[in-house]
Length: 305
Ligand SMILES: Cc1cc2nc3c(=O)[nH]c(=O)nc-3n(C[C@H](O)[C@H](O)[C@H](O)COP(=O)(O)OP(=O)(O)OC[C@H]3O[C@@H](n4cnc5c(N)ncnc54)[C@H](O)[C@@H]3O)c2cc1C
Figure 1 (cartoon, rainbow, N blue to C red):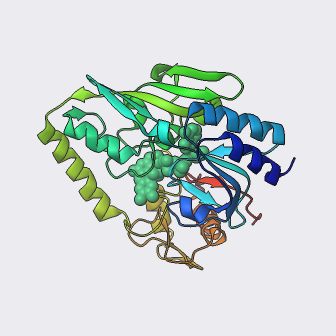
Figure 2 (cartoon, rainbow, N blue to C red):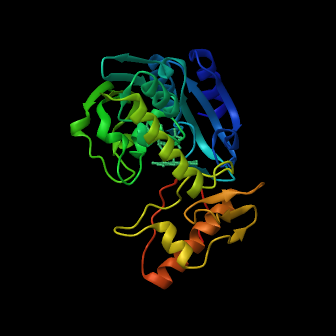
């Protein structure tokens, strides 16, 4: 019942890659994160099922991640296995207005392909990094549009049970949450798009990208918005009003472009980012009585404040 034993069993059984002590900084948009005991690329559903069986038998916890664009991983890493989806989950096919896509498809690629085929509905997602699986897990989107609105169905892999198809109507699409990760591993989805004028799609995408370029610190490592917006307000506005723009801790800094982004200026540690998160929460609570809730997901152990 050791990681080494699990590693050997997984190596022997999986068609995808199996790595030990994999630095998670390589797999997050923050470029931050210590090693995961095990890092698995599951290329097929059979890999996924095999991996989960072995990990359960070995008593090793696991988590599924996409491109790590909404993830802060502890400097100590993760004492368990990080599962990612490979080959079989990167395929997509279009039939009429329907796009059937694996959870490992890069969302930006689906957005571009829909545009090329004159299919509208994904314009809101232009500039959202990450995978389709991550987008469905997070119900990614903007204030006005989100992935749940175009989701016809999702296929989950439920450990111990197998594949389960869930209709989009039976999913509780909340603000930056879908409840899907609690139900299983997202492996595929069918999106329902609609024929649209390519000129209109292009215009909407260009406008959305321009807004991002003006309002977000693109090109500097981050995980996007750190906090969800409190009802009727904006986290960025509150953080800016509290005078926290440009506040620095180690290599991490509250962006001067968008106060709800914490950026890695180089060499930032997870402890720097978490320190800023706590400082922001405390300051906004003291000044405005508002409890900011993180949108970013955490992986690994973080020291108590
Ligand atoms: C510059 C920048 C801009 C951004 N702008 C936006 C924006 O406009 N709107 C927005 O909503 N988000 C935005 N984000 C955040 C992020 O891109 C989205 O949340 C994205 O959908 C996450 O996808 P991912 O593949 O990187 O997921 P990850 O970060 O890898 O994972 C996110 C969560 O989903 C879970 N998960 C991932 N894949 C699966 C799966 N297959 N099955 C079950 N659970 C899974 C993970 O366990 C984790 O809890 C931005 C991020 C950056 C860096």
